[in-house]
Amino acid sequence: MRDAFTSIWREAGTKGLLQGFQASVLRDAPYAGLYVLFYEAIKEQTGAALGSENLTRMQVQSKDAQYRSLSRTVAGIFKERGLVGFFDGVSIRIGRKVFSSAISWTVYETLLIFWRDRSRQASSMQSTILRSTMRAARPVLASSRALGKQPARTFSSTRVAQSGLNSLHTFTEEEQMLRESVKRFAEDIVAPKVREMDENETMDPEIIKGLFEQGLMGIETSADHGGAESSFTAAVIAIEELAKIDPSVSVMCDVHNTLVNTIFRTYATKEQQDKYLPLLAGSQLGSFCLSEPASGSDAFALQTRAEKKGDHWVLNGSKMWITNSKEAEIFLVFATVDPSKGYKGITCFVVEKDMGIEIAKKEQKLGIRASSTCTLNFDDVKVPLENVIGGEEMVGKGYKIAIEILNEGRIGIAGQMLGLAQGAFDKAVPYTYQRKQFGTAIGEFQGMAHQMANIATEIEAARLLTYNAARLKEEGKPFTKEAAMAKYYASVVAQKAAGSAIEWAGGVGFTRETGIEKFWRDSKIGAIYEGTSNIQLNTIAKFLQKQYS
Image (cartoon, rainbow, N blue to C red):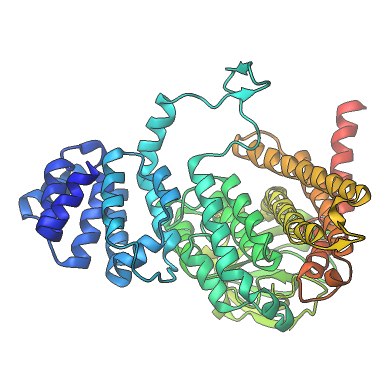
């Protein structure tokens, strides 16, 4: 079939291909959404078009609003980037997973034949295509999974279990594709800027823009609100992959997704979701504002006040240690409406930057320097009544939001620390097999080999704790204890792995040039934010007491 399409193209050009496309493909209605993508995109690029009758038929076959929106998205990308830009954004390996229909894959490869030799262009639209295509391909992939064989767990070379149970390293097609996409973005776009951002203690605006363009700032957000509508584990995977290159970029993505977006998705009114989620998925960074000078681990000792005056609330007070605060446009601020009620007076407000938030002192930190951490001042900041998260009925219930959301956020931090540990390991270990002393690669000495084996085992243990907590959360099962374990242990392993990596690389590891020492500096925060290690141990101990006492 590929030869047939190639022949049509060569003999009749684009218009001929589209006619052959229509004759051979469009009758296959179940995949109409994918075909409309190609048709609309090619039409925008070349000006060639089918007759109105055929176009109408395609639109009827693709009544689903998601497909129609997808067609417009891809057409727009073609118009801006051209075919070369499109194919730079879709690798053959990813294409084989997404375009599981043999026919659609044939069309893809046919087009690629004529464009693969063109000079490659950097495509910031890569994940827009990936994210959109994943959504369009869901029905196809679901059918393939239902009809195909279940992955089996192999216990030996001859005995295979057919229970259908999977390991914690089993991921959906979407999660696998997202991991590869984030990995490429981190290595190609983030990595060249890491040292400069660390030295300047500033996040490059192009990195923030890239995260939005890659679809990484609305991973769990619904397609209706401009998000990827993927899993919580997918968000953790993205956080992990970013942290392998730069934990500063990782935590920005983490806080935005696991704290800010999740609060809107879970607790906000429909009006609030419709207003803010598209912004948070598309262009505006979010910030979570709970900590204060007098309330760290004792988060509910906060003193920021909110007073109701007429048709608005007036906020006064200060917040401290606030991540993303320099670049953010949307802030979730916790304040008390009645100090006499203690934690039951705490309420969560949506505050936009231009409502009057003062971004005060920016902290100079040991690690994650590119991630902004600032003090915020609220001096008679007026917030509309409708900006209470969840509406009027959630006044005084902000403590519930904070408790539940931090449990989820800790899994995100575990993912960050996991990625950091792996990143340090990946940088240092290859060096040990290149560096020779006494005529032998230092990584081959038993003492060194055992150290690396030990760290590799601990990283894997942290990975399994993290993935397990993420899956429990997705399944709607209790996960508070598991989240605390994952966050605590991953932060311990991150420090140990990063410190060991410096020693394995010797004097080279101690210099800034390799970037290994940065991983150690960045690792220290894991034992502090979103619940210190002692707080995590307290949480775990309470569950043990309840279980055994």
